[in-house]
Length: 252
Image (cartoon, rainbow, N blue to C red):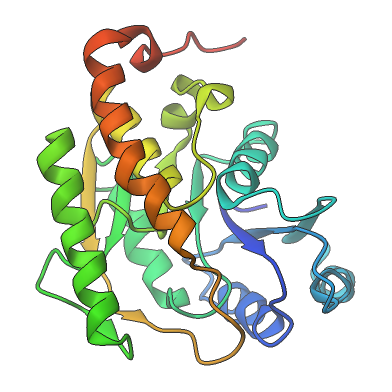
């Protein structure tokens, strides 16, 4: 068992999931990661592919199967709780579609394990704009969305909406995961902002983000609307509901 687990939510990712699992598990012996796939009842058979792979990698690959599409945020929270019930020290969010490169896991984990970060963010914007194959309109929307979040929240994070994130165990133990409100795009912002308000150290690690080649994007207008108005609510709560950002006592 590794000290790090990569949590990968899936919905209709049959074109990508086997290659992603094999790529992560093939990282060298100095950088071993376990994988937890959280599948939302994909009708394309994604879960069956993972279950077949578990027979090959029984000690390093696991799956949580859910009844249906319940939202990205709830998938990650289910994964965090699963990991906290075990002995993992580092929990990493990652997409299944190769927009996050498996080799970048090493730098993310190192930032927390060796470089003093409590939370590390695979950042598309810390060294410019490192996005491949996105339409310019989407690049601009994502870039300025992060700028908007920084302005409203005061977080000094260039890529506030990033979904490639490593958490030290202590961060997830301190956050009341049941109080996290947002399920879509804003979930990523809420988790970073909560950690920021609790005083945890956030470090951005430069990555190259590559738009998916296979499968279908899960983005929608509703996801962006949640983020737009959710950020204002987060800022409001940080002023008038400070208890929401108080660290939980560690459970013995």
